[in-house]
Image 1 (cartoon, rainbow, N blue to C red):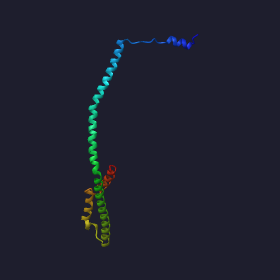
Image 2: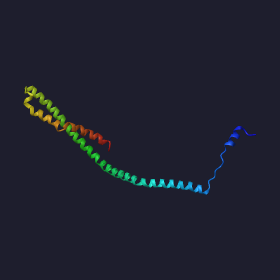
Image 3: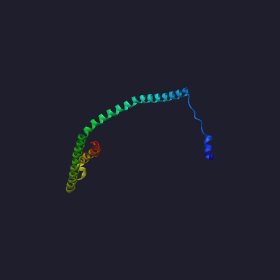
Image 4: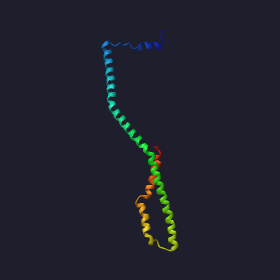
Length: 145
């Protein structure tokens, strides 16, 4: 005797469906058309991919050419910064000594107003900001050695 499960399975059984040759051909042609579409899409992507690959290769060559200049630029930035830093320190020390001499002699600052103008001109010529820039450039370029 069959169990209730077996009876249920027997009543719910799906008859096998077999496709005739005409239906099989249509299914296969549909799959072929889908495959041809995928192949055409792949072929169309080649032009864009080639353009991107060419751009990347060109950039890579330019980047490598620039990288060869990095050590020289680091050395130039550092040397110029060091020179400007030494000049700044010399100016600061000399100015402090000069101020002490003026005070000792009792000479008013107005008597050396041209000196104050000269010191102010350093700010106008970006002397101090260039020092910071050169120091930053050196540290930045160190990353690309």
